[in-house]
Length: 139
Image (cartoon, rainbow, N blue to C red; front, side):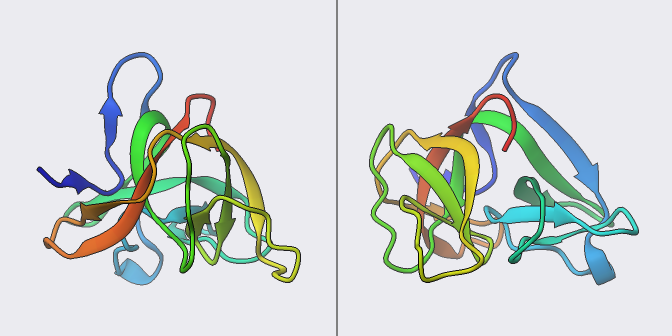
């Protein structure tokens, strides 16, 4: 069975899921790092943004954002090779296992990988290279 992007699979006291309007009214891709804009909407995180969570399921006019959780499946950056227990970094809104000194948008986050590379699907059934991360205290 394929896993869903942006969904915490270990549920309990560790998960916090909020709801935000997407910037410009267009849903953010599921399983990417998101940042909050000055008007309170969310967008895919870019260089210099403060990452607030992982985008989840789009709803009618809003979108869920996992602000903390365990075993949350995220999209991987090109060339990422995650390993269990390794720290997590964000490049262009996608997740990777290593700091890239040649990239200005490489951001360390408060998370570790809890799986290696797998396939996970968004709500439309599109499959992505993914891995699960644990970030119980938020990113």
